[in-house]
Each structure stands twice: as structure tokens, then as C-alpha cells.
Length: 414
Image (tube, rainbow, N blue to C red):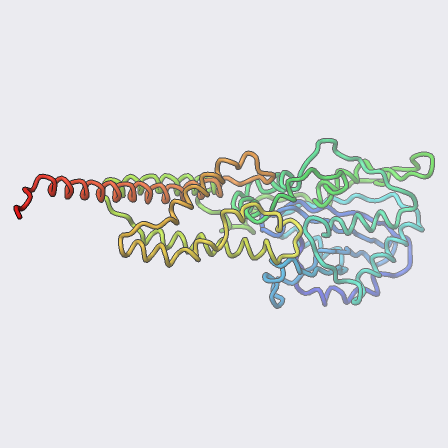
């Protein structure tokens, strides 16, 4: 969630961050930004030496977007993140430049617990321990901070959970409602696994959900609650929407996925009517559509089969988004060139219609963009079926006329 490219420079303060002295520990929750990687916010943990000079933020969200094969490894679910320490003033300055808010929950820890937190974090930023295999849903900057707190507090922590059941997809939609293309991209790639109801603890993969759970958390011994875990909540930095919008300027698209899909479907219907009236098929357009359909299907099938992300191998969209159009493309082009019929359009018409019909019963939520684009592809198949029907009707009429002509012609005498 948080990008820090020069993490080696930040790690230079690792040893000094572990100095002895009174310690105050705060969990930091940063509001969502407008860049894609910051849409869901961020969690870090601050360790301040009371009366001393050290004041550091331990951040589990360090990654280098410019590292070799970063995007490729991210698609494969093999992205490695790193824990690093950065001075508090640098951390705060970065979020001030983003226009995000930063809220600190100061933990009510005993001196022994505070030292345990510091030692835990110092051990995590050692070169041999700092790298971990990132998973957005189950192993990210927020879950790592939660694990640290749970491990270092003396006694079980009872969190304040929200009772309403939620799924991963529903929770992510809360943060992408103003970013419809990011939401549609998630919905296309993420499968049915993100539509299962979560446990309370699993909802804390999002920073603001962990913030709310931590706000009412208590530490228990064997018999009773001993203390509230959060002693004080302080808004360290107020959000600045003007700055956030300026940082993300140029990221908005002129059309939403819904508008784009509806326009595509409307054009498909208009094209179908034009082809019916002109008795001419624009098959070169279908070549482009099949190429796009097939290449998108290659991506979906690839991540479905090979990605280590647990939420991608349950994607039901592979039913309609797969490389099959690329396989059928040569036959379709040959048939169109020779003005012959092909069973591809019959098959696809039935397949796409069945997919649209059974969407309400799928265990996976399907985005509006997929529905409208599948409906658009269906209009192309229907147009060909109408064209084929007229071709067959013309052939039958021609045969009937020929037979009638032969029947009326006089027979030769032998």
C-alpha cells in the first residue's frame, strides 16, 4: 500500500531506532489516497523514545515499483514487500504531500510490552527478516501490524468487531465507489473466493477496519478485562482533498464502465440492424473483436492457472473470457471470405446467452462491464444467425424456383 523506493536509505536508521529508553507505541492509520496503490489506505506503527531523540515509523508496505519484473511478479502473486524504519518527520511529510490524513492510536502498554514491540519490530527490519511474501487480502501492512500488537501484548486482545457480515468484494467496493474502472478491474480478475463471508478478524486486512476494531479493544487476563488497549486517539494530520486530487490528476476516465458498456451494446444493436437492412456483414470488425476477446481471455486464463493469488483461481469469468476465440478465428475468417456459414456463431450465441441467463445463480458477483460487453458480443452472434437464416432462405427459394421451372418444361419425345 505504501511505496518507498529508497528503502536501503531508510534502513540506515535501523540500529539507532532500537535505542534504550521509555517508549510510546502508536498505531498509525492513513486515509485512502487517489492513486491505485493507495486506494485502501495504509497502516504503520510508530515507536517514539520518550525524552530521547529517536522517533521512527516501522512500515511493512515498502516496495520498489521499478524493481525487475515487478508487474510480472505481482500478477503471479510473487510480490515481495519489506519492513523498514523511517524517521517520523519523513513519514509525515510524505502523507502531507499526498493530502491524506494520519490518525495515531496511542497504545496503553506496560514498559515491558513497549520494549517487546520495539524488539519485535527491530528484529523484523533486519536484512535477513525484512522481506515477506505480500498478499493483499491476508498478509499486508495492516495484518502485519495486527500480528505485532497481538504477539507483544501480555494477554489476549479482545477487539471491537462490527457485527454485519461482509465479503472481501463488498469491502473493497466501499473504497472504489469513486474509482469505477479500478473496481471493474478488480471484479474481472478476482474470483468467487472474495465473495465468501469473512470472519471478523479477516476484515482487518483493511486499515480503517483495523482502526475501528482497535478503538474498542481490551486486554484480558484469565478472568476479566484489565485495560483498554488504546489510551488516546490523535489526528496528527488532516486530509487535504485539494492536494489529493492534484496528486491524482489525469487518472479519471471520461466514461464510467456502465456508460461505456451501454454505448458498446447500443452500437452492437445499431450495427445488427444496419447489417440486416443492407444484407452485408462487417466481418473485419468481428476479427478485431475476436482478437480482443481472445487476448483478454489469455490473461484471465493465465492468472487462473498460474497465479499464486488465492482469489484468482476461482474466477468464473474464465467461462466466457478465454483464448477460444483465437482458436476459432481462422475458420471464421475463411468462412466470411468465401461467404459460407460456420457453426462458431451458433455455438457462441448459445454459450453467451446461457452465461447471461445464469449470472444470478453464480457464486461470484459479475461486474456491469462484463455483462454489457457479453451482451454486445451476443448481438454480433445474433446478427450472423439472421444473416445465415436469410442465406439459407435464399438458397431454398432458388432451389424451389429451379425445381418449378423443370416441372413446367415439356418432356422430350423419344
